[in-house]
Image (cartoon, rainbow, N blue to C red; front, side):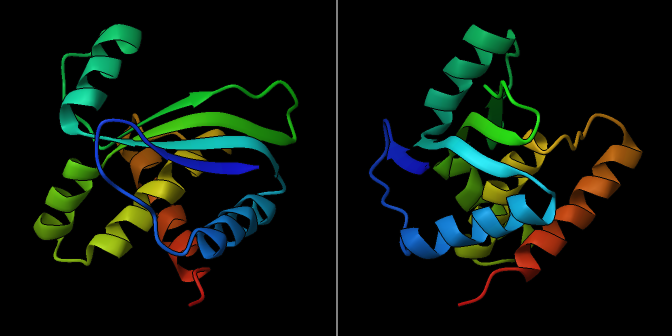
Length: 139
């Protein structure tokens, strides 16, 4: 089950069914099933508070992923996304808001599939996987 929620922002993800099918396709391509996956959209300030409270990081970010999985083959987690940061990054990277949002949606899921992004090599692999995930989007 994949859920989309907005906490402190007015945001309603369009094409929910298409996004859910796409996210399942990404998980399947990595040999995972999705148990319960929650995407929570918030403001920069809302995500900053979570970053401080749970990770003790005093920084702004576009996404924070919490892995709640108990079974190695089943993905369960909570993915918090700053809609403001996604909008800002889409402008900075010269892509549409929809494309940047999908990149971030995939990024969180890829973390739950085991991909990391702490080292330069990990970042390169993550970017490659994001691009592969974006290529799975059919509209």
